[in-house]
Image (cartoon, rainbow, N blue to C red; front, side, top):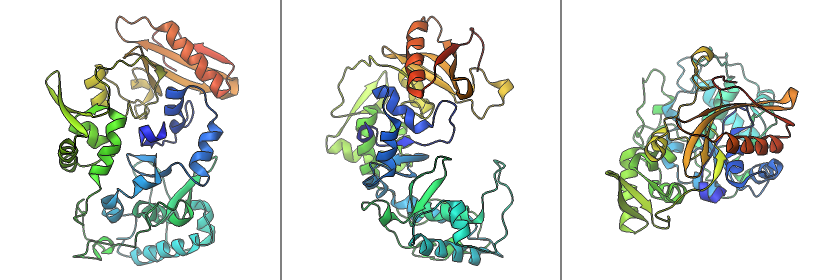
Length: 378
């Protein structure tokens, strides 16, 4: 299943459970989560974490395709361009790489192992105040010079050297700018650095080749969004894969699209499943609207009094259509899975939804399913 999806998004929200567990449940039904943990966190790892969509698990070999993403880590200022402390921040980055040669660690553990005197930065627009050690580790992680070997029970990244995480991971040299200006990314006061400054490109052909069987059919936007590629780069990759015969150009009600050569057509999807907001079928909302006529948005970041359907709304797939939105919350201290069901107009799928909720509750170890009256949200 992981090979078919090629990317599984990670998110810290656990209103039901951590989001990366749910795509496998939606497709396979109940499975031992400890088994998935071992496949992602113990050698030889099935998948590793990288910025492949958002934060996501991908096959270790897939990380090699993100040439531009690794090379242009410095487009974002993690602290390396600070006029007063930038040089000390870069020194901290280098010290962390050396320290990780002694073994992996979380940001908190590494802050003790590699002390520094850098002042902490002000809170960002999310209200978070990440430590300088955390910021330096994130810069190194984006650049590919270090990797994530797993997550703690508190969902903290455990950082490690690439070679200590998986042999297929690239081990790039430290880059601070493009060849024409190698100090660009550490020069104080340089202003905004535009993406693409290195002239490097991610291997879009390889990435679209992975997205093809996962999507089955898609527009340029669908294939670009799967791994967050530029549309122009994706368009060129589609042209290449059309020439090789791996993609076939088609029209879907007048919309220009491409079908993966092994995708069955016509095809009906008889599955019944609750889908996480970060499921690969769901995370491109434009594609969801195009194929299913289902306009969906996540309301996690919407103030509670302005939510229409709820905090953690799972689209309900049944017999080839998305037939309801189900606001779901695991109330662990009460052993209850609470849900509010919002059917699409004309749909009567209550029994099918409740059967799926019962299956989900059993998998989560929750004894009761509580379905709220119509019109309420959790």
